[in-house]
Length: 368
Ligand SMILES: Cc1cc2nc3c(=O)[nH]c(=O)nc-3n(C[C@H](O)[C@H](O)[C@H](O)COP(=O)(O)OP(=O)(O)OC[C@H]3O[C@@H](n4cnc5c(N)ncnc54)[C@H](O)[C@@H]3O)c2cc1C
Image (cartoon, rainbow, N blue to C red; front, side, top):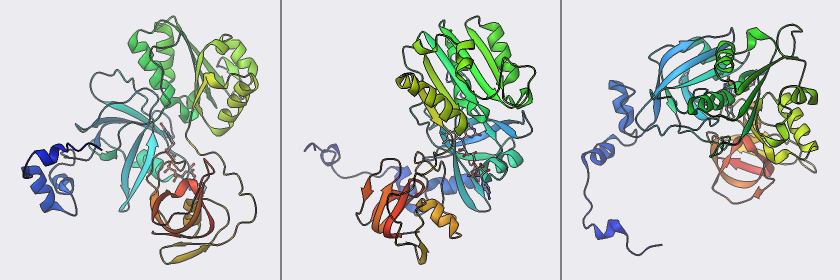
């Protein structure tokens, strides 16, 4: 640590009008008061205003968002956390911008698929309207194109997983990328392809872009039919072993493509983004003990702490359910937990744990 602490050298601490206002506003923070005037007028918090709303298919909603001045932009493929208040409870979920990172008007676009019983996606599908303001995080994630761009790029998506690779395609087209791109998208049929018109226009306008639509239910139309199989790659991107491949889609597609690349020793050429967590592997040995969430005691059954709390009727705040957005972080006051992604065991008292990727090993107490 440096001994030359600039704060110490600066002499007596001076209070800016903002820091005085913040001290007066404690414990709510200045932004809680400013939002009564205008929710887009924030000092610290990043938010976004919904500028336009479309419903391109029966079960999806497309939002154009204008972020507040704190926004630092994103790289194609990354995700943001979006928060909305539903019945007085703040809910946070991750969404991948689908727009080009080169978009020049400062706006970006999300496309959200409304899951049949999903809380936030159904809410956005039903309630989103221009003027609505949502909470926002800075963009995050390592699912990104490298710089300089590779010579050949294969983009594979399925269903709502189209969004991050759509962003990559739009970005590459805006950059005037000259290498080869194949955009291979899996959907039940043409009415389920979220960006069908634009994909066809981009392929028509850019000779280096090939669009391959694979329909898993419809037998007519499309370029390929059925679930992912090796022959699909041979048909549309025979050079894929030399390319960088970016994959995002439902668990079945992710598993099949991963297995194919691993089987061909090409795993390091495949970059993936999961929208849903992988199933939790069972704990080795017997599951014992009880977890206390505040004053509520529950029996351990080997599931994650988030699932355990929900099974007990609690509704802890959460987002991605896979350890990337940190919105389910709570303090473990005692006991031992295992991180299901790394296998790491933590037995320290009073540490923060992510409920969605931790499970109890014996008795545990969570400050919920
Ligand atoms: C990095 C990342 C990027 C993402 N980007 C996008 C994106 O661009 N577009 C997009 O649409 N999604 C995206 N997602 C998924 C998104 O974050 C949410 O998971 C999704 O919108 C569902 O949230 P929800 O609140 O509607 O569902 P939740 O309420 O959280 O439910 C999750 C799932 O459980 C099911 N479920 C809920 N309750 C029940 C019940 N009682 N019985 C049976 N099933 C139930 C729902 O159908 C849903 O499938 C992304 C996820 C990640 C991790």
